[in-house]
Length: 365
Image 1 (cartoon, rainbow, N blue to C red):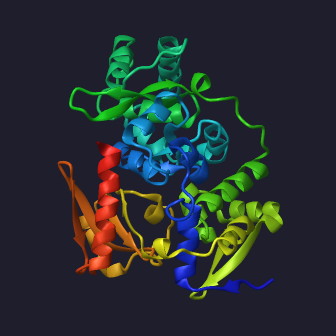
Image 2: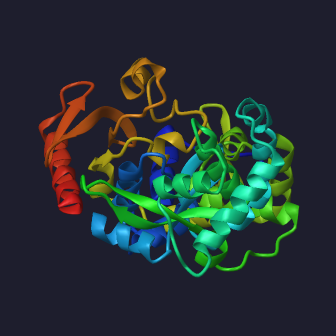
Image 3: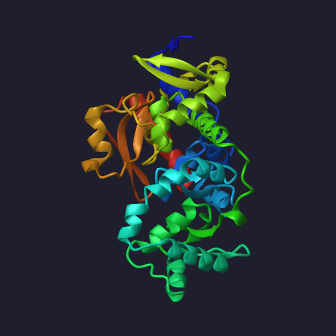
């Protein structure tokens, strides 16, 4: 069946519905994590706001409470990047991604003089330290390893944690309230922090990955999915075949996008409201609405890319989104939002931006 042709505005509206940015919001941060499957979390504060803004009004305290309770966990499920994920999903995600990720670590591990025996000993020590529901900060774990004769100097400590998380032993769990007021997380044993893994065949796991990605990010291209998971085109094609009629295709500006039939039905049943059409959103740096896709051209003009990632340094600025597209950046100055639009906003958009700024202030109060 040929793909249905739709406008770019329709594509972006579907994505905002999928991501709970527009349309019905989720009741709590844990539900957002289940909706999107994974939200980038290398910037802890930004990731917390990404979870909250997709709810009906969660505060930062609500997000931290879900992390403390283990309703959301943080790990490296793909791309070597920290993400917030539902605890029940992490293991089957790792079953798809771990082999390729670990293979890519070999050179760096040799450079750090990390061998199989080092990882085995580090795993033995941290398991003894955490068994029984205990948790440990990164700094304290470095000390424990050093005292056990395992050097954590330089980047060795980070790579030990990363490998043990990638292979399903550790994850980031409860929140640590630092003296400077900036919360972080402690490490826990994944087996004590998450339910038993789902029993899925390799084809079933990658099919679930594609379905869940599209439920929370669609419409998206096959290449978007392959980039997001660092998987293979062959795996994506297999997943598409397994899912069958659960997916359909759209064509936008000559590009084919995959979308769930459920999302299309939902969009048709709930026409876009004026409030959604005119909304202005303050999204955090690294938000999935921008970074959840390899091709960001539907959302961001090339001429503004330098303003989002200055010097191409990998640090994505918080963004202002209006009409589904990035129209500026913003920063926090104390308790105040300072907008930096690419062009002067209309009075109507400026008023809606101020409304979003108040929502952010309420979240972070």
